[in-house]
Image 1: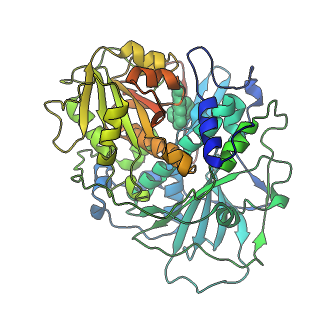
Image 2: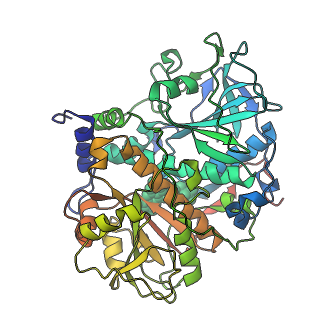
Image 3: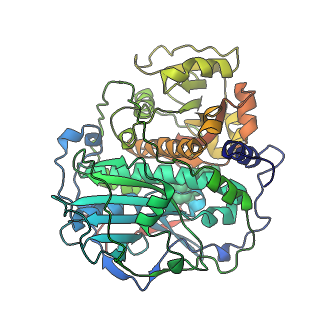
Length: 535
Ligand SMILES: Cc1cc2nc3c(=O)[nH]c(=O)nc-3n(C[C@H](O)[C@H](O)[C@H](O)COP(=O)(O)O)c2cc1C
């Protein structure tokens, strides 16, 4: 990549070149050998393995309770409780089999099921788990002990402390999606953060982004800056660190002594990479900056959600799936639709309490089949600060009318009345799932000048989009429906449809939701033989 001389310019240039167009997809591999897919599991050979328990299905919290956290007595931070959180956030949810093919699904979704996200655990003072840094292996639901502090560095904690760090292996997505793969890795991080937040909430815990950590500090904490452990293999990009605690604990991450013992060497995931995508290295560097910023902003005060679902939260989380097809005729209830929208509004509740940043994404809905809501285009304006700019950026003939029965606090507007099944499908890379569902949506991100001035916000925009998608995935399950993330869309065709002519707003992620059609040819098996799913 040549030309851009600032990180902001590089970020804009990457975004432009990674767009899909109606007549041309972003640069990617010309052929794919599915048998040569990069290994979706990272291992650290030589590290001690610590088995985890299967306890998720013993957690009896109801899904509706997650919105009323005071109703969930916080569990003690222990090996057992940590096991349950990892199982619900990043563990395997099922094995699928079709003909000769067999593949695992996880609680966190991933573009192309390629799973670029790795999870690390930093623990201090937990019962039954020695202090140190661990890497989570979802395939076996166990931890690998990467770092063992040989002596206490600072004052021993008064109580157990836990952090979970996330990193990305870009090659896993770039292998299939080429240059656009960086975007998918960031969206996957957003899903993983929300998956972790919901999992922690089932145990009455908080999960909070540790702010003000720069890349070097995070790489050091997660052991990703050790060339001797990663020589000749795919590198990991540190993304963020989340503090898990029963209350609003703000302890800093541990400062273990350099004398700690390190164990394990990372495995090689793809012995014969066929392509290189230097544009991904450029965008990764350009968006590093202060990816975990301080300067929190208060969320707007929306009324609390009273969620009616009495389903067991852990069972619902383990059952989350992407729909492959929808019944093209069923509609959904208006009350379920409005509750889903309500859950997308930023408030001091899960998952938005992970990081109290101002919202920068505003979904435009293609409503196809929601009882009592006229088919057409609608907008949910998630922050009043963006209201004027959004109205100004979208088509001047849009209606901006509040639907008659919409809850009073919901900033939800009808833009046009139309059958948008076909256009929704066309802008989502012609994928039928976008038109056959009850509704689909395009998440518009505030883009310029924010991204030029603070290029690391490019990552944040995708994280926020992934979190929005994750809320919809779980809300769909709670309503007896199913969702699917859509990373493949024709960026500028979406913009043209909505009248967007500059880059003040850009489409970041699509999603679709409806009544799923199961494929009876695909067999399903439990995620782990050791988990009793009837419990
Ligand atoms: C960021 C992201 C983008 C995705 N894009 C698409 C898409 O364009 N089309 C599609 O059919 N599924 C898409 N999916 C769904 C994935 O294929 C799905 O999550 C993956 O196969 C794992 O299946 P599961 O969600 O049932 O666990 C996407 C998922 C994510 C998280």
